[in-house]
Length: 140
Image 1 (cartoon, rainbow, N blue to C red):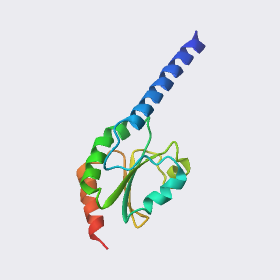
Image 2 (image 1 turned 120 degrees about the vertical axis):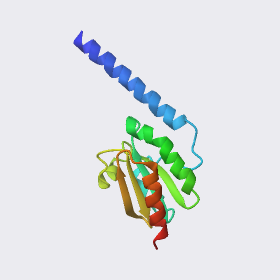
Image 3 (image 1 turned 180 degrees about the horizontal axis):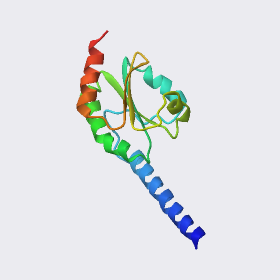
Image 4 (image 1 turned 45 degrees about the vertical axis):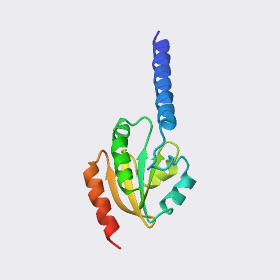
């Protein structure tokens, strides 16, 4: 009975993760956030695509990441004309996630001219990110 129970639990968890993944991927596409980065090679192109780029390192299974998405969307809506906004799936871009030491997610990294300018680990207030982004954009 123990094996059947474990199999059942595993099956339910797997189905749930697939449903969440499909919901996020097939959900409404953002007007302000570029499609999710799902390969390490695309990452370098993304951070060099504009002078200012913000990357949200996340995972489908991460509840705090899901909670932060509406906030990220609002920040992107405010700055999208001058800043590139991306999401990076750490499960699909493991080398990049490791390189940027994203053990705890969500991690938001602001890049300026391809270099890290600011980092936020965990849920961060939208207002703080907005203020910091404005300061980063003011400096030459």
